[in-house]
Image 1: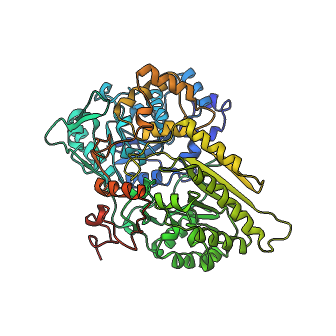
Image 2: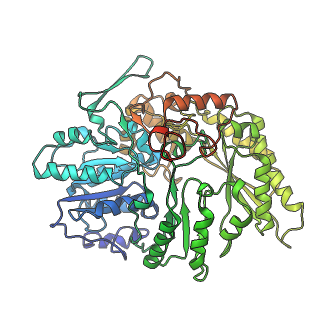
Image 3: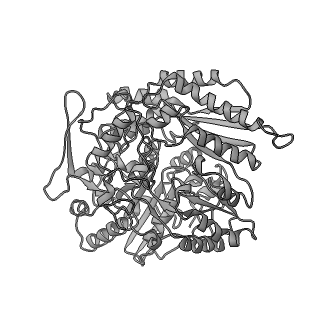
Length: 615
């Protein structure tokens, strides 16, 4: 890119490699030879955005079209933003250096609710009107997708089109429609009306919402008869045939994940009742070991990384994991390439599988019991017993492990103080287990207990449940701290104020757009970073715009209430989610999808694990 206009400020900012582009593997096209120019914006730092596999996959699909060039853009850190504003430099794309406002399409991936202010701030920094209603034919089309798009309403006033679901083919179809309408000289309004007819595309401006005196949604309906009342998610059926990037930009600076990443499969069979990804990513679809092995070799050849990370929601649920590991180990061992198996279930981590994973070198070992008692694990449908947890830890210790990290949540529905004390009791049992036999000479054990706060998420059985109030979450955090009596247990916990704000936006409606705009106006951004998060500022924002945040976070929703995201179809039915919510209250578990189909709604939508799918 042409760095002339920024080179005089790069020496004064932290990590200038974030802003220069020009990396090995960068894709450059002739901008005068393409019909559509697109900027894919990640509303967080370069280091985080460059590690995002989803963005790489989508850019691979888009850039495969010779008539389209999709470039990259990341949120500038505070020092760079201040310098850009002082010098009058608008937000730009890394490859060409051209201003974002001059592109045809600007896309954002919304992976986390606390990136909303960054998204709006990036529009403002680009010189693009932040509200969709204020943009005309001279402005780029603003689109968004990602996990948070399953409840698009808090960002509805800012985004022209949301892509719901997996966008590999849907985004290309949208870009093709844009190309057609651009060549025909048709207006923005005409395009948006047509875009709403593409499966998975939600155009907020084409829907009318009203509210009752109680503040709840009274009605939500399309403004025109040809606009769908419900937007159905898109998803791929054959991952072996899906596009996958095996050659991509190599960063100049360290990123969050400096390694090869293989996407092994999508979806999850488990049905944990708090987990949004486990619901919205259904059905389960696996890549074959042959395709994964080939992609790994191509990645290694193009990147030279010495670690391969297996990407999935629960890697131990991949039905051909042993076969895949055998293929990979046949060539990775001699080159000392590490195989990383994150998201491993503790009840699967033993025996031959563990030995294979540890062949090259040991990496961090993390398990997620989620709750400290069996009763609460049944409530959340974790489907793992304490005996299985202890067996998994014993297997780790028997193979030389001396440090384990365990993830839990507090504030889960029906949680009691006994459940909180159970976390400390379980951690102590694991410490005692280590010392019950002679272990590594001279080495003690460290059990790290990391506890996050429960956040009710859309399209989960817990979407109706109230989040504990902040003072109650803090009380439980201190209770657990008092229950831990040994230095062998390290206790970390999440900021309850951050979790409260996350819950507000996770379950919010489009009235929250006013709060986001006001927060950006007073300087809020990078809310997921401790350095920038300000609870007091956010409370001031809500007061200014007349919003009670507890209405969204701390209120029990009724099963018959109109939810802000009810016009989105993620594939899993509301009937199933209600049934699972009632099972949670009854402390009844539901078996995983391979054991028995629970008729979640995907049985007639391509799921291969149940009677409604293909055999």
